[in-house]
Length: 224
Image 1 (cartoon, rainbow, N blue to C red):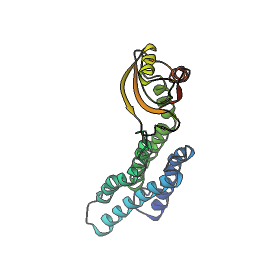
Image 2: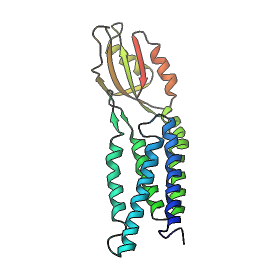
Image 3: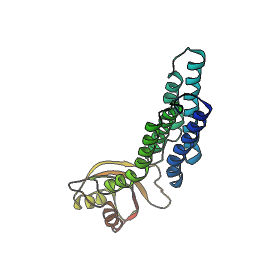
Image 4: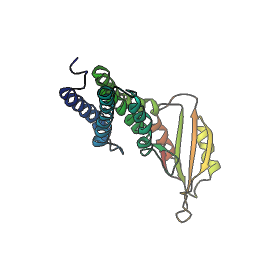
């Protein structure tokens, strides 16, 4: 119970565990060059632990206040930091959601450490790391064979949009949505489009993209 109570030894232990958990989670994000990396996750986890320990100290030392009030502010306040990692690209792609969720989860692990719930903090931190690393690979493979795919394609004057859409239908793909991109260049004679395509059966997206690249008049294509 000595590690549960707010002693000097417990404070050192909690900060150490928070640094370790935040570092493990942040290392994975940093290796993938995400907006929030090793130091960000460490600071979030340690900061959350400090806030929770401060709240516990105030409650124990002065015998007043709510023992979880400051922790509740962390849960809501971390959203502002997470929102800063979410961006919408020019092609309407949303980037940073996983990083934002990881920051929020890292703060939760820090709060658990700060209150002395080591078992939940360590187990939760390891699960967060596994979700960000191992599950990411499974999610990528699943997306590569999904029936729905969104593509960005640039067409030259050698092919009209109508002809291109007909060739896509010949590949047993249904076109659910088409929109013109502002990146279209009149100087180079290319026109950019974003299309949502749906297949009747699962197929490898890379093989499908290669088939599109072989169509005459397609200057560039990539999956979104």
